[in-house]
Structures are given as structure tokens and as C-alpha cells.
Image 1 (tube, helix red, strand yellow):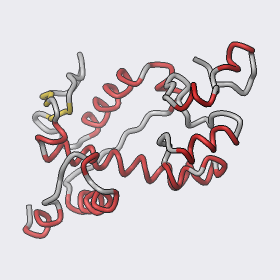
Image 2 (cartoon, helix red, strand yellow):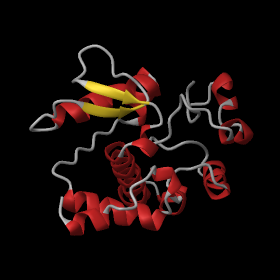
Image 3 (tube, helix red, strand yellow):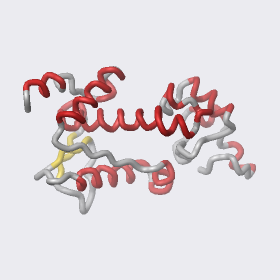
Image 4 (cartoon, helix red, strand yellow):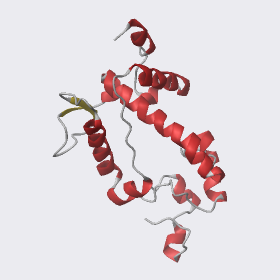
Amino acid sequence: MTRRARLALSDLNDSKKLSEQRREALADALWCFADQVVVVSASSATIDRDGLHVTNLRVMRDAIGALDPAPDVSLVDGFALGQGAPDHVQVIGGDRKSATIAAASIVAKTARDRLMRGPAASAHPEFGFESHVGYSTPEHQAALRNAAGLSPLHRRSFQSVAYPRLKLFDAVESGSPSAPGR
């Protein structure tokens, strides 16, 4: 690794512990200096069908499997990936213990936020994703009320604290077609 790369990546840390501005700068540096970057995503419908944990494990296996050349072993944050997974070592709290896991968390978070601010915000302007990227802020809760429900991007299986408060699932029992399913 060059001195320039080391300097640009010196603040690698758990993505949740970094400011948005620092996360974005690190993501740009990772895209510039990393030998490989793989981003794999899953739709909300897939997560609703298979569950978040199962989907996360499959997406991590797919991302590792897409690396070419494949590493001898990969580090993953928290969970063993199950049978058929490439060789890996689970590291509990990995995003604060391993630079590569921290880098993966930064790439994942910034890729998601960029998707929400760009294509998702353009496709669903009524939700204001460009300002809250889908997190349960007061603005997002107001958009959910004003838009009469959830967008196709919202997970129906994820009943955040905001959903019951907004009574978005009450209509399911009454058979309303615009209501999200459980």
C-alpha cells in the first residue's frame, strides 16, 4: 500500500462511528485504492420473503464469491456464513477490530445512502429519501403518513417503531389493498 493510500485510509473505523462527510471521503478512497470492491444488494421483497439475517448471510457469501482472484480466507463481521460459504473467519465486533471489515461497512453504508439519495429519491419523491435515506426521522414518519403507506422500497416484515405509531399495519386486518403485509 502506498503512503498516499495509507494516509487516505488512516481513519478507517466502524461506519457508524464516522461522520457522514468522513465516511464519504473514506468510501471514495476505498474505491480508488482497494484492489477489489464488490457490492451486492437484495431487494426489500427478497428480505421480506427470506428474512433479514438469511439474506445478509447470502449477500455476504455472494460478495466474497465474486472476488477474483478469491482470497485464501475472508473476515466477516459477527456471523459464520454457513455451509457452502467460501473460507472465512467470523470476527465479533469486526468493524471496530479489522480494517477490512470497517472498509466493508463503509462501502455498504455509503452505497446504500447513495442509492437512497439518487435513484430511490427520484423514483419516490414523495418520501424525501434524499434527506433521511430511509431512517425513521420525523420527516420520514410524516412522509409515510402523507404518502398513505409504504413505498416498494420499505420492508413489510420490518415493523419499526414508526410503523405502529403511524398505524400502517392496522389496515392489513381490514383488508385495505394499500396496506403493507406482515
